[in-house]
Each structure stands twice: as C-alpha cells, then as structure tokens.
Amino acid sequence: MGKDNVFFLEVIEWFDESGKELVHRIPEEGSGEIKWGAQLTVRESQAAVFFYNGKAYDAFGPGRHTLKTANIPLLTKIASIPWGMTSPLRAEVYFANMKVFPNLRWGTRDPVAFRDRELGLIRLRAFGVFNIRILQPVLFVNSLVGTQGIYSTEEISDYLNRVIVSRFNDFMGENIDTVFDLPARYNELSDELKNLLANDFTKFGLGLNDLYINSITPPPDVQKAIDDKSRLGVFDDINKLLKMKAAMALETASQTQGEAGAGLGMGMGFMMPSMLAGAFQDKTAPPSASREILCPSCKQPVPGDARFCPHCGQQLVIMKKCPYCGEDLPLNAKFCPSCGRPVDEKPEEKKCPHCGAMNLPNATFCNRCGEKL
Image 1 (tube, rainbow, N blue to C red):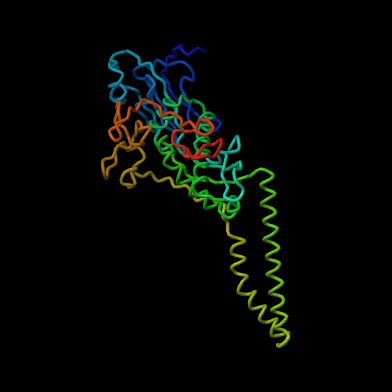
Image 2: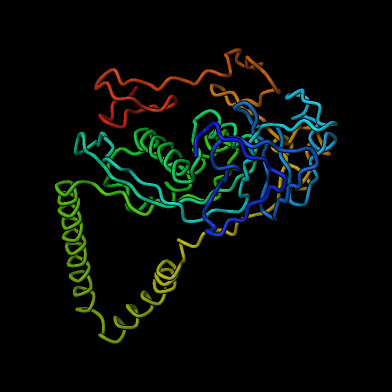
C-alpha cells in the first residue's frame, strides 16, 4: 500500500496479540479519514494518540469514545476543521501500550573503547536487560515517531539500545579506572547507570523501571591478564594460610590439642553466619514495580486519567521537551522558553576530533577510540 492511500475510519481499535508492541499505527500505512462520530475503543493499559501533520496533539485513556468536537478540542483547534458538520479529519492514530515491558535486551554491537589505568586502551563488550514503561504517550510519540522518524518496536528498541550504550561508555570513562575492579561492582554499576539514564528516558516520555548489567567482557588477551592476576591473589591467600598454620602450630606447642580445637571451633562459629548470609543473599531479584502515578513537579499521587495535577496545577500531558535542555515546551512553541534555542532543530551528533567517529549529541567519550570529546 502506498503512502498516499486514504482509509475511512469509523471504528478505531487495536489489540496487541503478540504482547510485544510498544506502539501501533492505524492505519499502518497512508492516512485515515476519521469521520465525525467515529467510535474509538481504548483498552486497559492503552492510550490512543492523535497524530496530525507530523505531530501528536491529544490522547485518550481506556474506554469507548465517540469522536466529536467536544471530545477533541485541542486537535480540532489545531486542525481548524468544522467537525460539527460532516467534514472528516485526515489523521493517524497511534496506540501506545502503557504496560511494563520487561527483559528488553541491550548490548554493544561493536566493542567500545575504554582506557584502562593498568592495561591501556582496550575494547569491552557489555550486555544486560532493562524494563521500561510509557509514562507520557503524547511526548513518546512526538519524540520517537515525530522527531526520530521511528515507527516499529524494533526501531524503538534499537534506538534506546544506542542511548544506553553511549551512556554506558561515558559512565565507564568517568567512574572506572581499571577492569580489575568490575566483577565486584556489577550491582552498584547497574544502579548508577540506571539513575544516569533516567533523565534521558524521561525526555522520550518513558520510565526506566530497572536496568541490569549481565556481563562486561574484555577481549581474550585481557581476560588472560585478569586470570593471571586472580592466580596471584590465590597464591597470596595460600601464603597467608601457611603463616596462620605456622602460628597455630606454635600455639599447640604450649597448649593442649583440645583447647586449640575449641578455640578454632569458636572462631568458625563466629565466621559461619556472615559467610552463609553472603552466600544465600539474592542480589538479582528485581524490586517490585510501582504502579503509582506521581506528578513530575510536586511528586504527589494523582489519578491516572488526570490532565492537570490537583495539588500544584502542573500539566500532566506533556506534548514535547526541548531537545537541548529537556524542559517542557508549550503547545506550538518555536523556541524554548528556558534556553532560547529553536525546538524543531535536531541536535547534531558529536564528531570525535581524534578519530572522526559520530556520537550521540550528549556523549562525553567516543565509542570508537575512547578519547574524551
């Protein structure tokens, strides 16, 4: 079907049989002539977003809606079409799936460069999973569909993966000196990286519920160096053990064997609880996801279908954010009221002055050579 095909929409609904679609476009290609009085059915955990002339303007929550002028005042004001008569509106509808999407995979397609304090320039591969949820459907459609031109779930996942990998590279360059420190810090690194990415995902209208680092893998030669250092650590532990054995032998020369055995048993008795506690502690269980909706301004709980916060008056349906400073933008704004930059311009990617590779606009370290941008 061509892009210019027109479909007459009288009943608009969508059911995600796969359970894997973040967003679904109706019609899938072309544009639809939505008739006055058309029926829109939005299921639980869905939001229907109207897309007109390249921008998303209004959203409907769960329920059955008859599309008339009174129901879509924002869109009819922009379109300037007399819906009170019989004139249809050419537009598309995007159904956003508002449920939590767990176990989305992220990882480096190509090894990223990292300057190690002890090993010099090395390349690392990293893999993990993350859970997301759409919080602002209008902002989500405007950011990824309108600005980035991304339509399919696969394209959305690929773009988010690129954002995570870029932030991971910056995070490693600023917080890790050597890969020898990595194995004991996976949980800590996952939490810190999640907090770093939360602001990036908020700009897309998404909430990052959880993020986990499953593995950070250096090349084979670096793995061999890590194994060699681990062996040296084992030998050092053996040396300490032999010294302890020698001290115990001196003690048994002046005391009876029974007393020494009792002392050793008491020492193991003190050590065993802490050893077992560390062994059986579940460090991988994800926290339960909270379904409470909070106002982004005052953090007070608000009803799920509210458009304004009843506590502080903050508008809850965000249309768009500034691509430079991330502030919320008024409807039809051409310049950001906070930083003054044009909001329709897409920030240019950063070109590395060392190797010439292109990186995301807010990247700090180059993904190819590891040098600071």
